[in-house]
Amino acid sequence: MAKQKTAYECSACGYTTLKWFGRCPECQEWSSAVERIEQQQTQTEHPLFVSSPRGKVIPLSEVKEEDIARITSGVEEFDRMLGGGVTVGGYNLISGPPGVGKSTLMHQIALAFAKNSKKVVYLSAEESPAQIKQRFSRLQKKDESLPDSLFVSDEANIEQLRIYLSNHAVDILFVDSIQAVYVPSVSGIPGSPTQIKECAVRLMDIAKRQGVTVFVVGHITKSGSIAGPMLLEHMVDTVLYFEGDTSLGYRMLRSSKNRFGPTDEVGIFTMTSEGLEPVKDPGRFFISDEENSSSGSIMSIMLEGTRPFLIEIQALATSSNFPQPRRVLTGFDANRVAMIAAVLEKRVDIFLSGMDLYLNVVGGIKVKTPSVDLPIAAALIAGIMNISVSRELAFIGEVGLGGEVRRVAGAELMIKEAERLGIKRICLPHRNFVNSKKRLKSIELLPVKTLFDVVEIIRTMSPFDS
Image 1 (cartoon, rainbow, N blue to C red):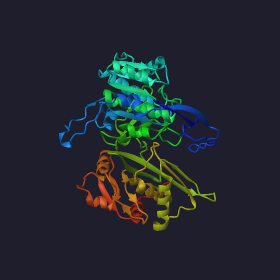
Image 2 (tube, helix red, strand yellow; image 1 turned 120 degrees about the horizontal axis):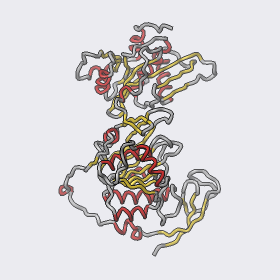
Image 3 (tube, rainbow, N blue to C red; image 1 turned 45 degrees about the vertical axis):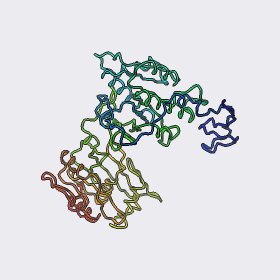
Image 4 (spheres, rainbow, N blue to C red; image 1 turned 30 degrees about the vertical axis):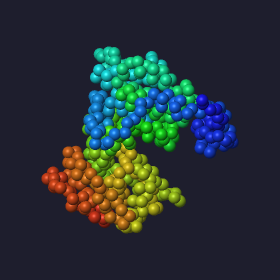
């Protein structure tokens, strides 16, 4: 028989303890303790534990190796990120900031699956069926009708959803969002940690026991993490982050976890009036159309996963009128730029401590890879010397604290992409030059060992004509 116990739960964050508290130790909120009496279920009383089949312990040699069945959605960027399509019975979580296009992407994926004769159920607890249909109609072409294999629901009760799925064969299930659904037998409002945990477990049971491929939309907090307990990310098979500035035209889909595919892939989409469109040539997407470069403008190759991009880095250094010079950065890690500026002062005698520094990545993309260290240093050097660097010259490399230029991974892919995009010369670490398997005839490689070599390369160019 179930036992009763008294607990105190924070109404703000869901923190639960057996003792009363005046201030929540988790979120530091005052007077948020709410007393509740709950029944403590034993393990055999939980419906999932009662209905779960008994597991078998068998020798590894007797386990049959079978290829994981995949189904393709028809959206090339999405399928490529997941390793060639979604896995049957996979449990996938997609998150991102408000307004970035999570629901739009899920609507398009649901339409694509339904057009491929898959039975799809799209559950949105945040919208009515009429609103859901309005979204699908907006994404559908005018001369096409909505597929008959696409079903929608605004049911927020997970138990009712389980009853429906047990009586109907469904291939794909979309839940938008997990913070809006609930389980009636569990205390707490939708979105509370207790409800998210229970809903996540029951959706996992649907995916693994019934073979339904599940997509779950999750909101994020101000800090950028997924709202709710970390247990949610551990349960799912795939965690996708949909990011991008809503004021810009691009959206980037990253995979931070994938049990059945690569985790270093990235997909790029553009937001249009008809929905999200995959970028056909992402290598040129983040560069400007200007033919002549200004001083402090440097071309570089960035590797996101296995996909190289051509990016343009701009730097501007001016004398400062403030006691503490300003550092205005767009798309860079402030600590990384501060380190590079300190190395330039200490090792190359280029003094930046009394100057305001402005650095920008054209297109608004955020760069985190160490291979952009050398382009940042080159942009600062060219900006200080007021020299215009040719757009046919690109820089790649990592800068060490001693001023040395270290080798980077994926140089062969970046060189190959640079050749395709019309880059004539690449300044790269000497180690990458030595380890290069082949020399390309249409591109010249300029090996450098230290930042002094970079300064000499930039000095040989014509000063900027103002």
